Length: 114
Length: 160
Image 1 (cartoon, rainbow over the protein chains, first blue to last red):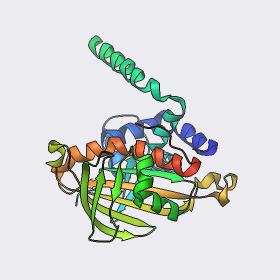
Image 2: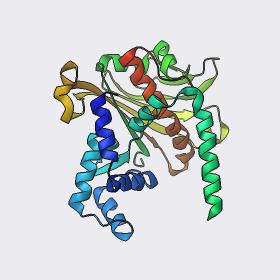
Image 3: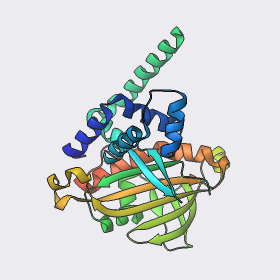
Image 4: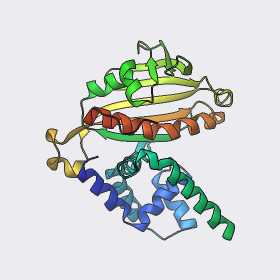
């Protein structure tokens, strides 16, 4: 990944609303703009349709969201490839399993608290 | 046909011909796909298979569409895990396009700012196909990272 492409990814991620949109797509991949807006209206931060549309464009430009046209509909998908590339850059191969164990431990302990 | 269950996109600083060759040449797939070779003549209607290094068959299927170097559609079924094989058939579409590389930054990148956009979509033929989609979706980001790295730098990023 070039520096410019990586800048685009980090800039796109440095915004809570855009991370919220990625979370929504992770929960349900392939949503249209209208579906995303309708679900946000039910629960979550209030965002106008224009704001959602602008955030999606920024995410798409950073390649964190990929789109597919189905008839007249545009479906949005979470594209994890750039995040995977970033992880790969700073996580050495031998650290992978230890980090997974640490992450599992953290999840386990924190879920036990609730 | 259900809507795609995932869409993965990667931009590779390479040519469509080289990306196509990497998707279809068994000696090249081996390098970035953890030893797996894709075996087929890549003509519409021909059989297609993914084989492990030890010769066992991982997945089988059929070439539905082949338009080199732009578009390849494979009907795909798992063969080595009974519970995933039972999930039935899926359809994988690989699209190769020469595009502006991250449009806003095009003027600052090499090769006139062009790159190959490789889009992988994978969908199950029926709703029962979810386990297969789940299985392949954990593999694709690694495979795509390795492919990008192999074509851009001549080496893969990680081996397992």
